[in-house]
Length: 153
Length: 113
Length: 200
Image (spheres, each protein chain N blue to C red):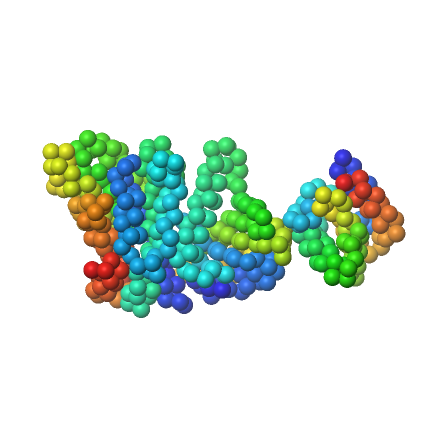
């Protein structure tokens, strides 16, 4: 499991244990990864996150167009594997969860423990930290050489 | 039809809730539950319990169980397997007449199918 | 603001390529995808129509390397350019840390550029973001076309660059200006993380 902030770890760990989910991804509503479990390649996590956020965003819009209350969850059921996508509010803004589950658990269990995860994260979230300087003021040299290396120049 | 079936169960003294659950998914198909009974949680956990018990009986070379009875100090849970992967579930207080409930539950499971 | 993970020392930034239909947004990403070594990029995800026009978005994750001790990643998105996809454009723009506005330099596409640029302003405003506050780079694409068909970077600057942001001529199909555009935007986005916040 990898989490951006340590306070996410305990609720997510509890969810993984109880739900027996194979893969779990928590992200902001704009598709930025907050925490993940089960993915092996960080670049795949970002793609899954972008697609998950896209699905949820279009689901919200679809609800708006149809004039109904926002839809908070979407389920894709495949053979042997299912995907549960849910949205919830935290003190850090709206977050989304993407859960891939197999035959060893069920949609009901995932749904139930996901609701508990959302509640636990809401309780565990500390107040947002004030912004701080992250990069050195002369970061541009490093940026330029990294970009040159990336593009083989 | 499912509503009538659930009403038949909740009429029994000591039954705090009755549900028809999709066993494989652990989700509620129909429910009549008293306040304080979380139907979604009951469905998820009953579905999981039934799947595990099927695994146990399968490992023993027996067919799937038709009725599960889980008894705790503050109450119990009964689940009867119906066809098409459905479960008929009852949540009870400790003083329920278990014999009567079993009978009604098995009949309900037949009807639910 | 870019997402910063202090425990694993990672920075992730969302960059969006915006512009009218067929201006070359997807071409920018395809060129980057083709040039960057496989281990430093993810697969390019394209949600396109049968005729290869972007339907929802294109997405390309890139791992830049270590900057000031932070592993830095970029998520590059394009929006669908066609006018009728405004709802999806708005969704993709959500939470963007920086925007490249790709203008089609052809004179006959001037109005399309203008409409798309206004649409960008409106969609940002819709999310409470003033276009003057977000890191923005202008790319004048298709500068390789015959000069009688296109507007010069100076002409396009007059029309679009009221903020005096970095603007770059490009030929995305052959890669000219693609690297420079990405470099200009990433620099602007990361500058925000290099600023010492005022003392409380």
